[in-house]
Structures are given as structure tokens and as C-alpha cells.
Image (cartoon, rainbow, N blue to C red; front, top):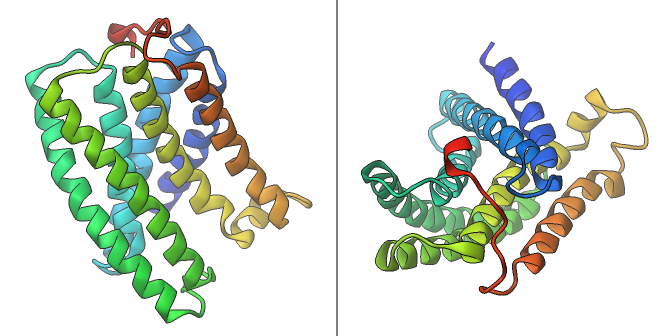
Length: 232
């Protein structure tokens, strides 16, 4: 039952994330799909960590679930009005991401040196490289967290950029966990979707769209996209 909930939440998160990412930022479609996306990602992250922990406390899904919750949570607090709770969440998140970064670096190096295939059929070296990439993203995120806690809430374009890229990394974790394994894709989608290029396409589109919006917000003086905090 828990696995069914996890799969359903992950599938829903990918659809809602694609809608929110493609829609006009701050618009009704973006806000509504974004709210549901956050809910689906939270369910997916919690169930992933729980399922992983039931296998082994060191299972990779435990890490992936917490990491998903970190990126979604800090992306959400970025566009919420500052409060005692948001400051507390950001403080806990900063501590958590430092621990997760260290664990990701150690685990990534271990997987690269180990070689072979994981229990899920994915090459350990591939897992190791992805772990190091995520460690880089988490390092940037931790630096951003520390700066924001020191200087106060962001405004305008920097605020939206922080929200955007963190939501995209969370979506990447969901999409990557599905599209990285051919057998998973083949059980749901027909040919040619399980092929390598087709499984890579959603990831390319995700980051292509993310960089497009970041380019639109490249200047700090850019006119902020309207975002209603009370409607998120």
C-alpha cells in the first residue's frame, strides 16, 4: 500500500511539476499546480524515506526522500511571508543539508570506486556521479541558505530564482528516479519511450525550461513576476 501511494504521488508530482514549470510564473495555473505539486512531493519524499528505511537505514531512498523534502520546503518558504516558523524551518534545513551534502560526497565516492550494478540494476558509477552532482547542488543551496539567514528575506528576481531552481531540483529527483531505470519506464510507457534518448529527453526539457526562466530573471533589477504569497 505504501509503495502504491509513493508511485502515485511521484507520477502526480511529475505531471504537476511540468505544468507549474511551463505556466506563467505567478499566474493562477502556476499557483494552483504548484500547491498540489508541493503536496505530492511531500508525500513522495516521506514514503520514499519510509520504504527505504524499512529495507535498511542506509538505503539510498532514505537520503533521496529527505533531500526532496529539503528542496521543496526551502523553495516554499522562499515565497512565503517571513515568520517565526519559516525562520525555524530554514535553520533546521541548513543543518540538514550540510549533513546530507557530506553523506552524498562520501556515498558518491564509494559508489564510483565500487563499480558494478546496484540492487536496482543501475550502474554504481552512475549513482556515484549523480550523488556528486547533487552534492554540488546542495553546497550551493547551503551557501544560499546561510546568506539569506544573515541578510534577511530576498525580494524581486533573486527571490523567484531561489524558488525556481530549488523546485526544479526537487522535480529532477522525482523524474530522475523514474526515468533512470529502463524497466520502470517500460512497465508504464510503450516503445520508443524506454529508449535511452527518450528517457533523457524529460530531464533535458526540465533543465532547459529552468534555465530559460532563470535567463528571464537574470537581472536583479528585472521586474518581478507577480506572486501572491497568500495564494501559494
